[in-house]
Each structure stands twice: as C-alpha cells, then as structure tokens.
Picture: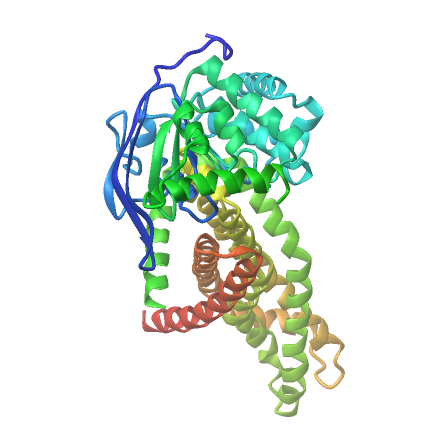
Length: 266
Length: 246
C-alpha cells in the first residue's frame, strides 16, 4: 500500500473525570469528553488554561491524578500502549531533534524501530517531505536552520511517517504569520482527508478552529466550560447570554476577545 | 540529595537493562567515542606530561640531597598509575565531556525533544544514555592509560635534564620497572572505569531532570560538574580503601 492511499481504522478517545494538579495547584478539573473516530476535535482556550497539559495526558507524557483516559480501550502511559495505538504528536515548537538533519528526524521512528530498510526509509521520507513542499536541500538542513513554518511542516511529516491512528497537534499555527499558518492548516486538512485519523488540535486561534473542526471544546482555567459542534460554538457569538450564566459568558468573552486580539490587532 | 541519589541508581539500573541493545546503538557509540577521544587527547597529553614533569621537579632535587634518586622513576610511575592519571583524566572528562552531555540532554529536555522521542516510542535511556555511557566507559580508561605513559615520559624528561638530580634514562626506567607492577596499572584502569560510569550517569541524570529554559540548562551543567568531582573524590577513597583491604 502506498503512503498516499492508506486509510486507518479510526479510533475514539474517551476522557472521564480527569483532574491534574502541579504543586497543589489544580490545572485540570474533572474533565470529561469523547472524540469520535476519525473526527477533528479542537480544544480551545486562553493561554494557561491547561490545553497542552490535557494533550500531554492523551499521549501518556503525563499521568492524571484522578480520572482516566481510554483510547480504543487502551490507557496511555501503560508499557505497551504504543504497540496497540500508534499515536503521534506535533509539538508547539516542533520538538525536532537539533542534532539530526530534517531527513534523519523524519525517518527516526522507522529507523529506530527497524521497520524498513534504509533505502526504503529514505524514499518514504522523501515522498512525505515533497508532499509538504520541502525540497531535497531542505532535507539536508538541520532544524536550527529552518523557519518556524518549515519546522512545523517537518514535525508534521515526522508524525505522518509513523502511520498514526491518532494525531495530536499542539498550537500548530502559533508564532506563524497568517500566510504560513494557512499553509499549515491546509496540510492538516489534506492529511486528515487522505488518512482519516482521529485528530485533536489544541489552539487559541478561533479562525483555525471554526475552519477545520468537527467538534470544539472550550477549556478555561482548567474547566471544560462548553463543548459542541462548530456550528453550536459559532452560535454563541450571536446569542445574548444571560448574566447569570457565568460559564457561557466566559466562553463568549474568550471567543470575542480571542478574535479581536488575533485578527484586529487589539 | 537522597532523592537524586536514588534517581541516579534507578537510571543506572535501567541503563544496565538496556546493555543488550548496544549493537543497535553502535553508530552513535562510535560517534561519541570519536567525539570524546578526539576532543580530549591533546589536553590529556599536555596535562599528563606537565604533571609528570612537576612531580619530578619537586621530588628529584630532594631525593638527590638524600642520595636516593634511584626511586624517582618508581614514585612517579606509581603516583601516575594509581592516583594522578585516573583522577586528572576524570576531571578533564568531567569538564570537556560530562558538561557537554548534561548541556545537550538538558537542552533536549527543555525543548521537548525527549518528549518527542517518547511519543515515538523511543526509549530515551536507550537512545541517549546508553551510547554515551558506553563511549565514556571505553574512552576514560584509554585516556588514563595514555596519561600514565605520557606522565612517565614527562617525569623522565625533567629528571634527566635537571642537573641537580642527574638521573639517567636507564636508572629512571629501572626504577619504574622494579616498582610499578601490572596490578598497579590495572588498579588505575579499574578506578577510571568506575569514575567513567559515575561521570556518565551523573551527567545524563542531571540533563534528564533539567527544567526551566537556558538558565535551567546552565544550572544543570554546574551541578553536574560539581557533583561529578565530589563523586570522583569519594569513590577514589572508597576504591583505594577497598583495594588496600583485599
């Protein structure tokens, strides 16, 4: 099967009553949600709301104090989790290994797990990089020689080479200018259409969320205040929210301020 | 302190468990062998030749006054083999290699590279710690052996050219040969191997627990260098005591 025509059986994510504290300070409070197989689920919230912490729980980099996460019946962080659930994460800063070239970074998973012979790894890596508009010359560069947008694209290529069933993106458009951010969003959408993985995106970028999401969850101060389809979340902006509904007011304020600060320069 | 010690022991144990994976890490081990050896050889030579020379400079005239210049070669030989070469080379490696290990792994920790490895189901101990530990475990004893030889030559040169001592080349080597046994050289090499493992594990551990950006990396490097030097001195006493006991 070639890389371009593979499709994976998408899987669901269930988060149930998850709580996490650092040094006694609660970061996530009683979070519960489900991500349907093959959908794009966007987790929005202001800086410091716990989005990245939640994402790191999903891939087993952190363990919850309370509650549980189940991905296709497996619990992240258990020793053989990745043998059952191939998952990949695209870090906010790319998380590329600076001591390796772009080509070596993208082929690292295949090489370290000895999944393919070196020549085939080189070919797979080359194809993925080409799809993401990265040249052979780029492939020989080191991460510190790349622009922010290129780093994100290399990180995406490295994730996709793993043939994951679930892909997690942490702030994929942060620190990028609008033009580069759009190309990254287009790539995420293309990959999702081609591969059909369950995708979770953490962002505070409202336009990205509205453009790409099937479902959106709003996380503020470690609490999941609202979750719904993209249409349902959009409708909040045009609704008159009663003052006594503090949670929805916070959500509307966040969506409004977020839009103003990013797109209007306020 | 005890928490760190416990973590270091656990990291060492986990690294031992990964030993069977050495063949998969061979390219990286060879790379580090070259890096560490190449980076340290010239400095090791300079430090050792002057150490041997300083010993001769201090000792030979005093010995000549008492008419016992015949033991100069032996004393320099024993001092270099049993103590000075292992300790000096360990300190050199702490400064040149241990600090770089901590800085590199610390930077990887701070900039999410280690998290990225974990999300690719790549064991950071196998990928980062094992090759460095293996390489330092080979390089430090080799450098120590090199240092012993160069130190002896440094001692010889100063003894020979120092007119108050008036030691001949033959006399120096006779003294060296009759006083320094293979077991003395082995003692130095065993020490340096143990020093290498402790430098490697302290440096890697300190890198892996780095937090908080560039300042955190700086703090980790300082801690790793200081802790390694202290560990070397304590271990040196314990090993010497143990060898004297057996």
